[in-house]
Amino acid sequence: MNTDKQKAELIERPQRFFDADHPFASLDPVLQSILLNRDVSAVDDCDADLSKLIPFTFLKDINKACELLYQALVNQKKVLVVGDFDADGATSTAVALKGLRALGFQHVSYLVPDRFKFGYGLSPMIVEEAIKQKPDLIITVDNGISSIEGVARARELGMDVLVTDHHLPGKEIPLANAIINPNQLGCGFPEKSLAGVGVMFYVLIALRAYLRERNFFEGQDEPRLVNLLDLVALGTVVDLVPLESNNRRLVQQGLLRVRKGHACEGIKALASVSGRNAERFRSSDFAFALGPRINAAGRLDDMSIGIECLLSEDPAEAYSLAQALNDFNEDRKQIEGSMKEEALALLPEMHDVGIHDSLLCLYHERWHQGVVGIVASRLKEIYHLPSIVFAQNEEQPDELKGSARSVAGLHMRDLLDRVASQHPELLKKFGGHAMAAGMTIQKKDFESFSQIVNEQMNEVLGSSREDILQARIFFDGALAAHHFNMDFARALQNFEPWGQGFPEPLFKNRFRILSQRVLSEKHLKMTVKLDASEQNCDAIAFNVPSELWVYEGEEVELLYKLDINEFRGLQNLQLMVEKIIPL
Image (cartoon, rainbow, N blue to C red):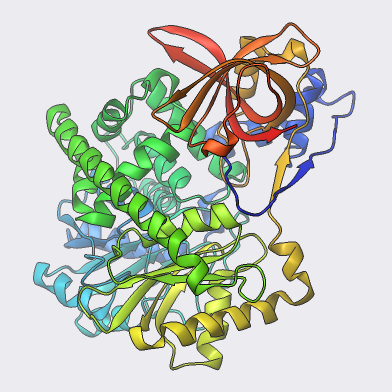
């Protein structure tokens, strides 16, 4: 439910249709517009066939990486996977371990940095932890491209390093044995949006082809790496990378595995504890049910619990771990709720929102270091302003660790790079990408940093400031009465997965409220009638402020998604309301 503090500009996407001889020309005109407005112009763009995946040969250094891994395999060297503490990092780690073991590696283990002690990536401190396991080869997943000092230390200690990452590189890259990253300079991979888990999956399929050329599998079945696609889909959706055609294929294949009952035990267990129907699993279930539960472990405790859940092959063990993740998520929601309320209360004291300050920068000594990223996201959603939320570093009380979330049109990592270049004393370290970043500053520098990052942002945005900071909601027009049926709703679902960069269709119509009731003091369950028709439909809006509650007989406009609700085995059409617009 949209509760933005800035008035959002509603923009209707144009009506567009395929040429008469196009295979999609027979589709409902609404579906044609939806696809064309999401840059789908060819049938192949919606083809989930794995043969249509972009070839791994486009990845820079892929042969070098395969030779490195081949030598580690034939000599049965010890391999250590160094992951990250979010869902992309967890799935990347699980895919690496499962895939390498399937390909014949016998000595593979993993290490995930404790975010509160070591921070992000392959730091020199993590290398000192890693050396205790005496690995011959370190593989980073979902990190490493900014680990200049850590890679150097590992090489100094005699370890080989393979970096697999998708984050944007800085001015300097680490001196690893090989780097696989579609965003590194000189990489010809045409779609740069692979998640960390997607990069690791590509390394595995490249290695399998490399081994095949050397007759490594002679006399035995080749490992079916397709079995990893449920994990690839989970990490891709939850990391909010754009769902370009290649990513959509990976996610579609992963969804099919879940729906057919072929998911790993960890995903089955997580679906169960979150009350999701595996047979009707959707990309939104990855995003809003499984992802938060896995992320909660890294935010509040130890991401190893999430990784072990995804690695488990025992249903009972997987369910027990999934339940622990569910408990973490309940704790996370409580912490997040109180932090968000405190942040909203602090905001008027710390910022002149929309006049001088365009970037929200907040800190409270009680805030939890693991939850600042979610609170920054909530503030950005409410105000449509880039937001940075800080908490005290538990290991270094004189430091603050912050998490930033940006809006389209402002590249957050580039902004922090600009601050670091002009004020090198402010940022101790930082990293990230366009829409999200992390950083460490001295506590004493908080006010200076807040002022300077706002000044720098206003300079970067210049005359585009007002335009970029204007909240906009794009929708796909109005639906006619004949669209309110299960067949059309299922036709929409045929073009899933929806997600980042490929948004689920959003419609706007005028309705009369026939009945309503309030659930849990914040959700509205309604029956509505489409304006100037006899078409009735159920509708639900979540987290509705009391000032936006509607009542029987009222006429309103609703921004909504068309959904199929299932309850006790029965299915019915339901509107998922995103915004209520009083008339």
